[in-house]
Every structure is written in structure tokens, then in C-alpha cells.
Length: 151
Image 1 (cartoon, rainbow, N blue to C red):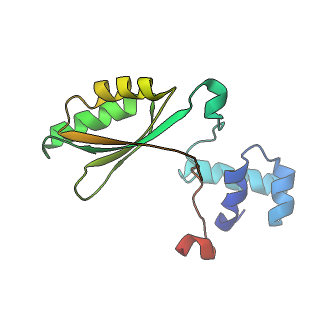
Image 2: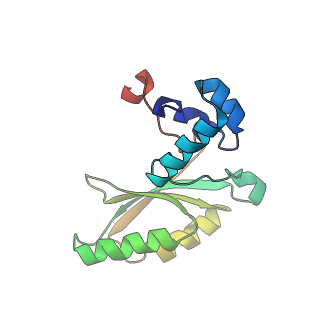
């Protein structure tokens, strides 16, 4: 399977090998070999189930901008470790500009968000919470090859 067809696996990792093979012009065994190679090379990092947050009571999403007290490497290391360890942190990115990090935080409601934020961001210089009103697009697919990758 050529890398430009990784979109098929990103859309549905449970798609049968025969179907993938039919779509890309390969035998199921060739598709299996290529998928195994992509996993070993780290191109495919994980195959996960996407859970509907509302179905499990997680209905509040917020984007949180965070500025640390200082730029000491130890402070960044400690902050990053706390983000990785926190189940309510869905994503965290180090950014450039007036803020140091952007955090996607998911909780059951506003009160839970406040509680988690007070715990997570107690040692930062400042943070700003931007509650999400509506999810327009949420996903982790990566554009691979073709014109969409350059847009």
C-alpha cells in the first residue's frame, strides 16, 4: 500500500485487508506486509478506538493557553510531565509567542474543568481558558501525499 493511501487506514483501521487491497491494487498479504512495515517504522504509531465523549459523560472541551513562570528547562519538563500524566488533557502543544503551551482539556462540565485547571495550572504564571462551543472538526488524521498535504 503506497503511503498516499494511508488515509484509508486512518479513516478505519478495522477495514479488512481484502478491502484495503482492492482499493489500492494489492493482495491482502502484501497489504499486511506493508502495514507491518509501517508499524515497525513508526509511521503508524497506534490503532485506537475513537470514543464519543458525550457517550461517556465528557461534554466540556476547553482550549487552555498557558504561560509558565519562567523558561527554565526543569519547569518545562515538570509541566510536560504533568500534562502527559493527566487523563483530562487530550492534547498539549508547546507553542511560540506570548503563551508557552496550548492544552486541549476535556471534562464532564465547567465545574470539573475549573477543578482540574486549578490543580494543573497552580504553578504557572497565567492561563486563559477558552470553552469550546461546538466541535466543528475533531480528529487526528494526517494529510498524506496528494494536494491536500500542501494546503
